[in-house]
Length: 362
Image 1 (cartoon, rainbow, N blue to C red):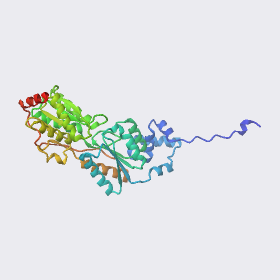
Image 2: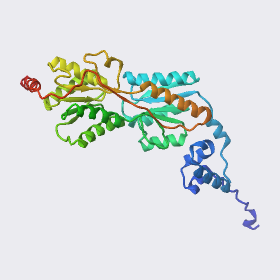
Image 3: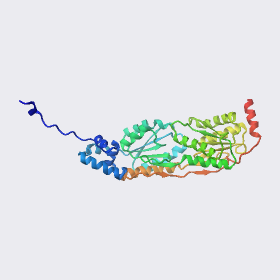
Image 4: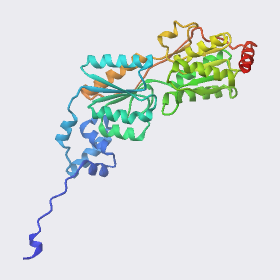
């Protein structure tokens, strides 16, 4: 018998989502969103994907879609730490709104290193998180790809950014720092030091340092200004450490810009121990406007950050996205410069020189 007679017609190979993505020139995630979350895809791109899929005979797998749509009522949050009152207030506002809507919140921390965020996000998703709140920008390409593939509603907070895929609800760290530096320049300060938190993987600190340096340069101030990086571990002691370094290396400093209120209050305490008067001899500013900034002596000049508002706005955005697939819109919240007693006009006095000489002689 002829072998060709035994041959059976081959079954047509089933078209999958990867085939459609390749034909349409888009990512697999875009194809999946076009069918399952169409409000997240531009109309032109969505129509193109659906037309090509129809032409190729592709239809989404209803079982897979049903699995994706299972509800756990869990929302995850990835934040730097819970040790700081700022982040505690943010999470408090977030959780209050989330639980009122019938969801539970799982919180994981990164230790101020956004390069650890992918592992934390993956852990939350694997535990069934339906949506995510993340502090800081989503810069890691692997994290971006993972989140786009999973199609999970996300909000980034604290840092306001223009990111099409990951809308942010936060404030502009650059503008807030610029406002503080310009305020100190108006007071006559030309020799400043910034005490910054850990810089690696920390877009908030990076933006503030950039604002500090660029604002000074824009005013023609290029000498006598420095940045000191300190960890947030035992932060109550780090400001004091930085002050000892400043008076040892940069005794001509007239103003210290601290990137947290904890740094600032620790720095003021060290100044008192060293016989430096704040603000008569040295101006010190903070960032966050924690509750204790008002009860410390001198009361702290700082940047007031809407921590609880960020948590509440982020929660409402995620709740709406889960309830009716509403597109999450970015929200820029405002910060305020709060002028209190720890800053004043720069002085050209000899007291600082005497203290510096005493410090050198120890």
